[in-house]
Image: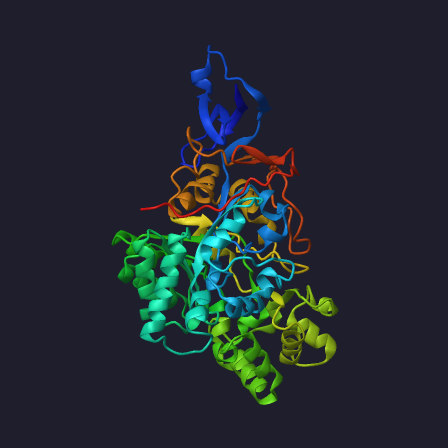
Length: 536
């Protein structure tokens, strides 16, 4: 007898087609039978060892978080309800060009310091891997949800070239090609870049194109955080489209939005650019989160020259008064490349987390508010945070536009990505709420997308980008990575005031046919594993 039958579910299967009522039978971690209501009329209904009454619930494929920063969280926190409770059954890690493989001992220490604001210091992690394959093997020991991995171009450059702003030598470029090829051969699904983060931002287009040629050979995709989301954003998008097309590589645009005052209402211009490329045969997708503020580290705002040489060199510059004044001038007057070419507005920079508990009073306040309370300049406050917290402070950057968010999420190549940073006292609520916020706010409340369209954006479309032949749809033979939610009540519990609240209206989540969320509660099941790139 089969393991489980889910009875009388309203199946939204990920295809975008209208829902239907059915009994869905699961065994051996896969969907073995789907009996639609019409077909079941007058017939004996399927039976199983366990039956779940899904009356009033939607059954859909598990959600795919196309942009996640859970690289260490999945190892640190077996519960991982931040994602599991949202119905996320697969996360894509290695984002923004910086993660923890491939590395050597030197590079690992540098990367841990550089992105402590994203993932924590890692002092509680046994870094018993160095290669991409070894990291994926570590995930295979059992994690809360499935995970795929992108080779991080910045980490690759740090390993082969260092943190200096210079061109790679031919030997160094060959080394980077080999590292990317090895990572893809070991199971990575593509290559990411963080082109406003050091050292990845030091790579010229010609270097990136060469790496993307390797990615294309292995059937992966390129996922850039491109060079600007502010001043020159459209030019930065066009640069990535041209680069990927020259390399013959599929392109997935990370957290693809148009931010800052200079881009208010300009999302249609971005979509026109993409539509022209798509019509010409380009292979392009994108992801967004359904919120207006962004989130990153305070150190990411610094100009690239201030970060050259790595975290220790950046701290040394911030300690020097003359260098610090030059940083301030670039931030406040010139427009730092770390702040997307736009002069920083300190009243939009909210501190969301610190690694030093002595700095907790800064959390939840903008830099401007803290500076005013102290009777000092905003840069004095920001500099103190950067030095005392050793670059580990995270921020919310309130620079987005709702009309841009809604316009972009309607596009047919759109997918969902939380960009969720789980560190900090008050992280961005997108980390805990992205997927139910799509379903509750943008589907049920606003009608920006139909339920069927939205589920397709969150399931089948990302699975197709990842080239996963048996995920992303409710189909016989597909993996039983599934979500049951109530379309009348599903909603993000997380808010900016209380960002770690779990969602409502998602009572059941299954991975590999096993309940990771059951009756609204996290089980002790660790059914997640590494999802490796499918061979060509």
